[in-house]
Length: 566
Image 1: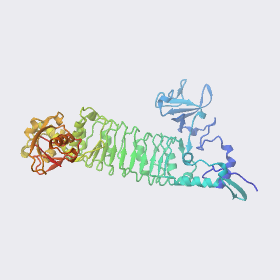
Image 2: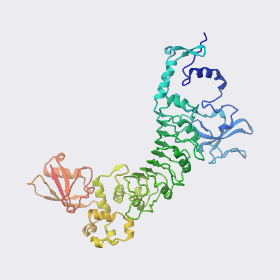
Image 3: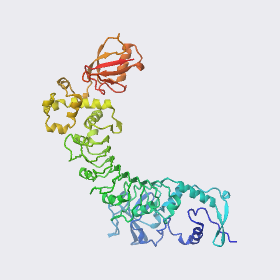
Image 4: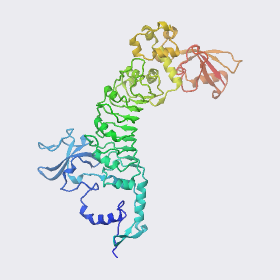
């Protein structure tokens, strides 16, 4: 009886396939794991455009051939990091290939280059458990044709196959993945994958991505960042490749906006699209694509300006737009006048404009035109960083955008909004009056220039009443200087306590006010509850519930009455 020992390392093949593969293995020893690039002096032209790794640095092969006077085969590569190279693809006056950067190129011997591995090999390398001791491995006799074959570790093979089939989330970042491998092998081994991180690998074209995705029909999240991909110049030949894909990350892939729109027909249910750092120029409106996208990240694309943003303004489901570090300084919605809402970005709830060149308040004024905007992040802009008083800037933004609920990831509580709006109303009261504002509604007609600079001012006057002359005479912008408030102090639950009158700094925290009252009334601080009444809002009592906030924060004014309970 002929016995052939078949190793469990030949995972994923039928026993018949294993038998034939063993016979051919030696003849294929010069082939890399990818099965398509040879590592000797007979390299074919297929290497041109391939992605490679050399000592941790990534590059694209631009040339393969002889570079006289040195004998032997050379690869000309263009580095992702141009500081890694030495020249622009020229040698002794001969141009062998071209680089975008004058020091982006190098010549390298083929045996120094890693062309990578196929997808399934990378998965096995990372996720298949190591074999146990050989003495624990069971042997089995199976029949191939008419020949009995002894298998070693076949139980372990089945166990490994089971491991792979259960995988739903994989991370193959920086694992040198370059292609799908043999057709059907991914679907056979690990078809249940739903989330895949393939960032910083050696994939060189969108077709290679499609070859992988074709076999992962349940794929919902795919990260392809830092793969320099070639995208199709025409409409994709394959559709339906991503039937379940909801999140796609294409940061630093070199994709253009036109290529995004061409490929997007294959993403019918996509919810989140990340396109950071691609030098994008938005050249046309999406037509019948990207209609399901709720989050779009265009960060660090310095070519984008406000006019280009209007081309994506009618994506019907877009709720989050990330525009950090694009260099934007202004924005305008031409369809909406002062005090009106725009029809653009109808579903936009969260806008991120960090790290830009925003230095003027009209930018913030325009954002109040967005009908659904509830959250804004705008840190590290000249407008927000140049001010010595960050609180002042925050109050202004809150007052200028009426529907905002979160600013720079901090919730805007009702009392903070009220304080910001009251301070805004008083801070610009004199300017309003000079512009034609008046306490009498029939005479209140500020000129257009004032209304453009302060679109919400009239609404605030309706909400809180027009500022009185007495308020405007003593007004300092945003009450930044400490000011003494003359307050009455009452005790609603203590009828025998007489009403007191005290002068307190408006910067005094509620905690310190409680401490003062505790000493005065001989009552433990922990038992005190504070609120206040204002003659401007009769019948309304406002709780002072945050001990760390100041009287100014709650917009307490001279003439108001503190209510103390215990």
